Image (cartoon, rainbow, N blue to C red):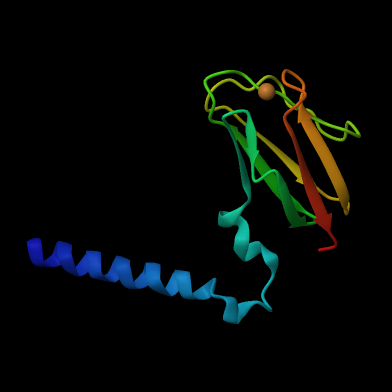
Length: 121
Ligand SMILES: [Cu+2]
C-alpha cells in the first residue's frame, strides 16, 4: 500500500512539473488565459499599496487585499471602480478593460494613493 501511495505521489509531482512547463516563457505565443492562476495582487499593508504602481494588460483582473488591522476603501480618481469598506483580510477585485492610467486612493485615508497602468492587450 505504501509503495502504491508513493508511486502516486511521484506521478502527481511529474504531472505538476509538466503543468508548470506549459506555463514556461517558451510558450509565450499561447493565449493569455494560461496566466489566470497568476493574477496581480496589490496588498494594502501599513497604510501603503504594494505595489503602488502596477502595469497590466487590458482584460486583467487586479485584486487588492487588506492586510492591515484597520479598514480601507478604494476609489478610482475617475470613479471607474470603487470598493466597499474592506476589513482585515477582505479583498476587492476589478477587471480593467480599457487602456489608460487609473489613479486611486483610500477614501478613509486619502493620503494613500496608487495607480494601475493598463496597456493594450
Ligand atoms: Cu485606508
